[in-house]
Length: 180
Image (cartoon, rainbow, N blue to C red; front, side, top):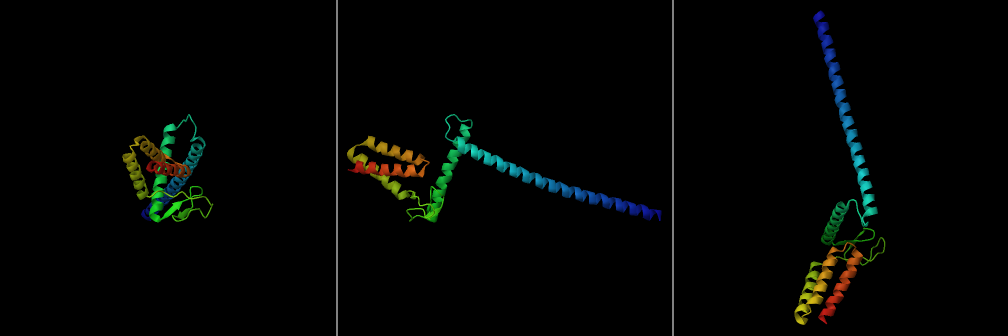
């Protein structure tokens, strides 16, 4: 009987150890999951603080994070270009004021009423380049054509869609003057 008692005690002891290890493993997994959730929450808070700081200081002359601010601006410009390309493929244009997607045919945003800035098509850009080249070769007005091309490069760098439309309008007027 003693053998069975020792065997029974050993089985109970092993099962208690196994139960404790399973509980420890469960607690460990729960704590890791809670830790990861808190780290994610903290990262979101840091991102929010960073965005608020960026928005508040993006136009400052002396910037503590000047290089990072420029990288953010460049990334935002690339994102905006990609969104415009996506919109062209989908046949949509995004309102610069409220972000609402509207059909390319629409002139005004149905949500906020803002006049929509429509992206240039590649055909229009090629036509404008040909107009500048023709005017340059016919009239020998290389300086004016260079001004129009410089305006076009400034237009490509413009981040504000409203300014971009004004520059495009000026560029078209300059091209028409060159033709005359």
